[in-house]
Length: 294
Image 1 (tube, rainbow, N blue to C red):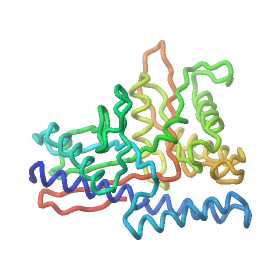
Image 2: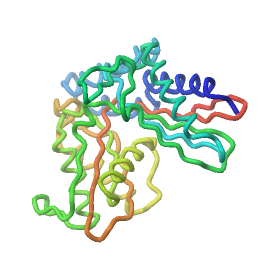
Image 3: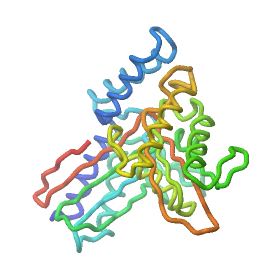
């Protein structure tokens, strides 16, 4: 298997692809949204601009958005591979990708309030290494923009204001409220990742992991599949529309997971992803051959 330098180069390529090449399922959803909006409406014009931007970025291998986001990566690796090596290789890849202008130098050291200049800072990137039985390495990367991160939300059930109890109906009310509260501030149309259960930290982590799911997939849990479809339909009836200009396309997808919890706590964690759902999945064989799965 490759050494640290080879892994760094593989990770730079994954970052470059995520930053500049939006997954086809997201592009298709944006096109359907554009076609559903009223001709010459602000909503349709906004989505036209978004789609032109996507094509320019793709053709030039340039970042889709000026906020190139926080890199969050899940690396599945064979038994015995060093997680310390993989983490260091990915951190170095972020610095190299920033130097190549695949990422912007937009990481700030919060203590000094200064831009680090190289895209990395304490906690940036966030790397999760998970051992599995395959001999391949699979990399799941998302670049999570700051604007959409600002409109994420976490609820505690029961919630008297929303008339939300500790049940699936209560969970739905919380997710819909988060979408409503976001309005256009998260660069709608958005994609929603949600998790109910867990603690405050694990709930948000799982809600972000849900954003790695392709838009067309269906939840294998029947109750959650029905919940996702219902929230998607109701969210697109809110009239918020692209960038908050009104219209039918407020949300492109809703993905919901759950975790166990303690009796005293019932959290609903909602992560909002903007239309620039920059995710990338690559499977890397021991030979170095790469298969792109997004």
